[in-house]
Image (cartoon, rainbow, N blue to C red; front, side, top):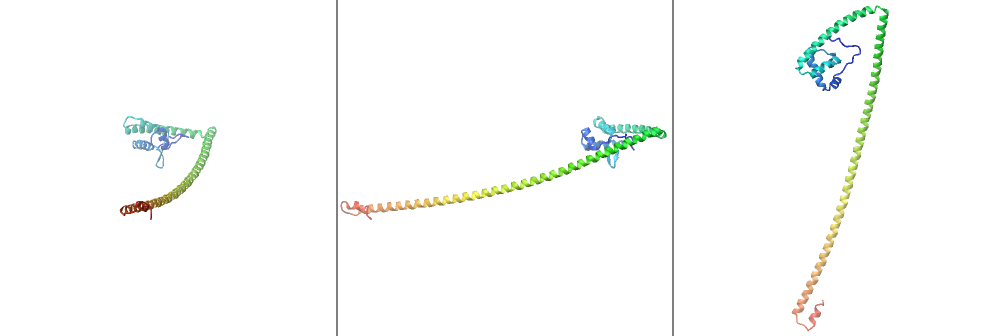
Length: 235
């Protein structure tokens, strides 16, 4: 099991590693699986990998290698194993040193001061995290309100637009019916005028026929010298 993490060493998520290496998140998971398959160890939070700087360097080496991925991953796993063994020996020596040093009041004071500073830094970090979470919650709440306002605005705009369209359609329908009525009235008036003209024409034709008939009768009936001419204009 890994035990080489340094004090205050930053840990990275899969997404952060993907952004730093400029590769996709699934590619980071793929490289992690290749490394683990060849004996490499990661820090874990449940089933989720936690990356430190040395892990990122291993991922970069795997990304940029021209050798088969498994060969490079095996070499990186062997290097990690050697490094962890060296760290284990160093930690044992440091542990013994601390056991001896804690017997010295001056060294104990320095050690307690170090612990106090670490706790203060942790508390400061927790305060900052709480502040960031509060700001994030405020931002999320504001975004929800903006979303609701935008949705309401869009709904109202759509309703107003539909009302305008319906009103325009009603106006167009009314205008169409008015024009249709006017056109029908014009057609009826033209029909009446045409019928009047036809009646007048018939009357003219009838008068002309009567006149022609009288001429024919006058011509065929013997009369005095001027009687036939006067009879043309008689009844």
